[in-house]
Amino acid sequence: MKTSRLSSFLLLGYGIFILAFLYLPLVSVGLASVSKARYLSFPIRKYNTGWYGEALASDTVQSLLWISLKVAGIVTVSSMVIGFLGALAFARYSWRFRKGFQKLILLPIFFPQTVLGLALLMWFNALGIVPSWKTAIIAHLVWIAPIATLIVSIRAFSFDPSLEEAARDMGASQWQVLREVTIPLLMPGVVSAGLFAFLLSWGNFPLSLFTTGADSTLPEWLFAKMISGYSPLVPTVGMLTVAGSAVLVAAGLILAWALKRLRPTT
Amino acid sequence: MSDLSPILRISALTKTFDEFTALHGIDLDVAEGEFLAIVGPSGSGKTTLIRLLVGMDDPTGGAIWLRDQRIDVIPANKRPTCMVFQSLALFPHRTVGQNIEFPLKLRGVKPGARKERALELLDLLRLPRDYYSKRIQQCSGGEKQRVALARALAFDPEILFFDEPLSALDYRLRKTLEKELKDLHRRTGKTFIYITHSLEEAMVMSDRIAIMRAGRFEQIAPAEEIYARPVSPFVAEFMGEVNFLSLSAGTVAGAALSPAAQAAFAGQSGTLVIRPESLRLAPASADLTLTGTVAAEYLLGSRVQYRFDSPAGELTVEVLREDAVAGGTGAQVALGCDIAAVHVIPEAEDAAA
Image 1: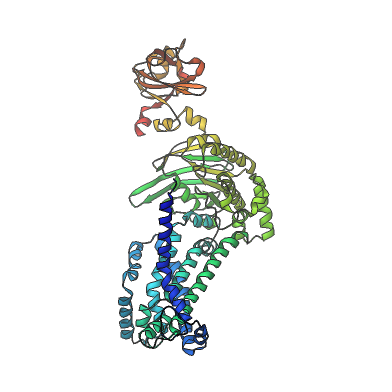
Image 2: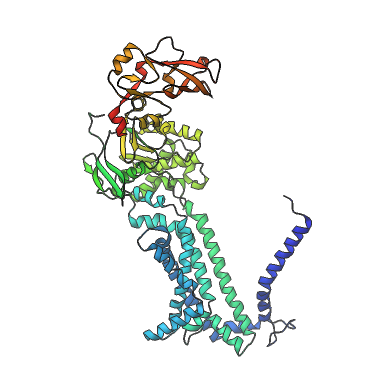
């Protein structure tokens, strides 16, 4: 079928509109971060990259980056482990309470994050735990681990159970089956789950707001500064946050590509 | 086969799932080096049986012996048997070579020796040696089949089980691989137990065929015997096109019997089994004769198949093309066959089936 000139023109226009709609706000933050002016206004009269140097030198920003990184890093690793084991229970093995488990694990995703954050804060108080970046890890996990489980489950559902049976038939112990067959085959799912976990934790605001206590993550600080004390440091730190995500996504894509490329020949 | 002690002995093997009984206490002896095909329609229990034999499931009752060792109490990974799966179960994240070497790697064989064995097996299965480093996804259906076989042989099992490994392939490839598999059986001298729902496959390859139905063996015998002397109408029909005539107290309704046939059937009741190729058209003399009207005619290459309406019921007849009926549909033809081509299933067994 041949599309007419008009319809392909309209399609192109629509595509450009959607992309602009999605990315212009991001571009404007990027522009604001290189503006010399103290307050956000367009068009930008004078450009200046000094805010980036200032941001990186600032103790506050460094501590924010470090806390966000610690939280996201630990959440990522934990989500990968929980997601892998959870997916085996969710999608791979049949057991008595599997149906119930499949429903229960989805529940935290359906809770609005603010409600979940509030509930967790009340719970920490009841247990006498002082909120800090460590409690934020738990809060993030409550929401992110189910998502990671679902992501790995997609992979686990397409897994042919006879592969494990064949390995066992050829003499593999339970542990060897896991190491030689199950883990390598679910690995792409686990890597994607890890990427999502990092991005969701790194950019999370509502759960962090309720559960970090005196500590602060990057999104929390951005919000606080937006309300009072705006300076070009705000869009600069915002852009640094985006850069963090971008580096991670790139690393993840390279890792996935390498896994696919290298495994069969090693 | 009975003079040798069997390599595999199954006794009173039972498997039940909740209320459903998949296997009703079955017995079977398999001789060393035999190629046994287990054939049955889906739901007959053949897959359940093979899963018990390799240890994927536990039997509810009975025992499985491999020579003098009871194996049904041994976990799957400790049994000296290996199975080629219906899905082939080749590891997609490993190369052809790594797949073949897998059982050797588990046993701790050194990489050099592993590779040597894998290359030998590629030769045996007539795959080029450079397939060693190929990825599984790059192999065709028939090549994957050979890789799966090579991997199973690398395990060097006492018995090699097959769970319908050819069912997903197209007709021509299946035919080629059937012959290759038979050839491989001869060259390796191993015991093969092959599960299939295709009788044709079983007949081409196996020494003996075990016909399964509803969790029991209906008949276990070489193909020719099952074809010529089925123990039940079920087996007879399973073995291809067949005509059944009802024998009642020595007479066959709608057919005339010669004195020899009358003597042979005297006093018997049951079902007469006559293969389509055993019925002749306009015979000069025959032990059993009847008249039929051609209802339909089908060309089968070198042969012609007819459907006749007759007083004894609908009959299928297959003749060589040069013996075809003149006149086509509607023609009245005398049909006959000799007593040697007729097999009688006595009434009692008939009723049981």
